[in-house]
Length: 254
Ligand SMILES: [Zn+2]
Picture 1 (tube, rainbow, N blue to C red):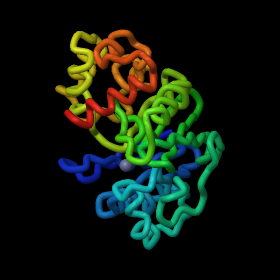
Picture 2 (cartoon, rainbow, N blue to C red):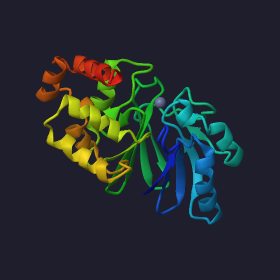
Picture 3 (tube, protein in one colour):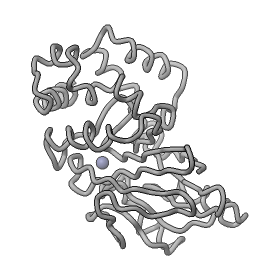
């Protein structure tokens, strides 16, 4: 499995589209190609040289900065779109835990409603390589806003659904938000070693996607540490859903 990040709206939205290619068949999907002017040149070069065989467009959720490029993309690549139910032009909405393949890559769709009700994360496995594309549900060191859901749903999404993936699964989120997330994490966990390490990384590297795993998130992501006494003390709650609610409120008001 080869994963190429395509940064979009750098300096404002700081989004990522991802081109995922099966090494053996060259079958490929493009995830969240929301800004075609930045995505099409990459795809055109690779399709014309035969480096990839693009088979699907995939969306993590319906927001414009994720699925808003679908109409324009279809003009250039009339392919089926797999995505959440509210994504424009979506053809296939995979049920929770449904499997499909990209060549020899096995994909599992994981429904994670909260940021939007149609949010889907895509877990991909190829041999011993594992990756999860989390849209605006899980960020490196953070999580998405609860636009269409509540703390109970985000707790389930992060701490039941995504936390149950193998610890060595690399995380590919929809935005580069890590620096801001570290700033917040330091308020909640000022002495934390894992948060300090993440901060060090962001001081050296601009891009953090694919550099951290689900196992790392359980250590440095305060939203995945709702059972951690340090976090509970900091927010003044102990019940996991209430800890989640308090964390999101604090971050929204930061
Ligand atoms: Zn969104």
